[in-house]
Image 1 (tube, one colour):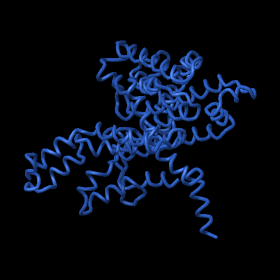
Image 2 (tube, one colour; image 1 turned 135 degrees about the horizontal axis):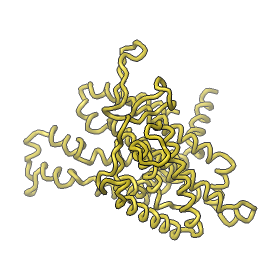
Image 3 (tube, one colour; image 1 turned 90 degrees about the vertical axis):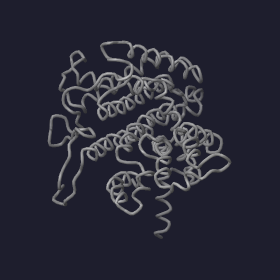
Image 4 (cartoon, helix red, strand yellow; image 1 turned 120 degrees about the horizontal axis):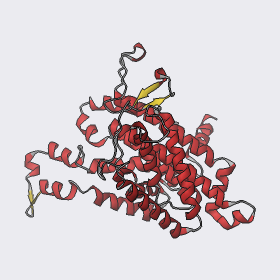
Length: 396
């Protein structure tokens, strides 16, 4: 719950920090609210990937398919291109519909893929993903072109209670709802901030739902499959259908993440939804955060993307900060024929993939259990339980 509290208070705290004398430093090195919105739905997608890969041991290299299905169902429904579905259907209902479509598709793919194990399972899911990607990319009915994809038309998507306007808020950095003088406290909530909290609520509920499944008897069988599938089958479990159901659930939550992405961005480019590199990103952050921890991939997403944001020069970051703050005399200092400015431009500016690759290799070599997995190993239990036990010990 402390993590949830941190995400709740972070936006106003970030605004306060920007107004301090160190505001330029905080702006360069701390993530903004719009950045965290992306981390929320990308983190949910990574958790859905970990749900199947971390808790059954079956790596799904085609998980982007379900992310893309969720995004495309939102966009196509909003544009009236889904037969039998109303163009004005509330976003929440459409999001669940997209999840159900992804659940069904996962069962269809799993019916073939789960006949195989290990690397063969991973490769066949990747093969299915590439087939779907090429189909969507070249089908004029669903894709305008490979780069932009379809764009949401009609009303702005809303998160809340369907058909109850007073209990729903519109999403979007500019088109969403904003609120002034909330409860007479003189606090204004921007459209970006409203979107941040609304998407955060959906992600939190999805996380709790996945946690509940994992800690249920069904989830125990998932873990048994991961640890020793032959033994689980020998004691009477039909492991095939347990794996199928787990794959379906993971596809459902991946589609929810895709729906949030499409609702916020307003479009669904095939290269950013169905492409296999979307799954590769989820795999990387899952390893960094801790595979088989569920929350770990979310922390991995925040850490990895935050580091990429600092090392990137597209929207601020380390290189622009150094060029803006270092005196000209320092920037033009010549060392063996190379100036400090040259070092910044050559070794830092635009080199984010290089350093992120090094970070990933270091994690694989020295932190194989990931961030959260390593912390749990040190505490000897889940973080929440261990912290609670220690606080209780100090009370007495």
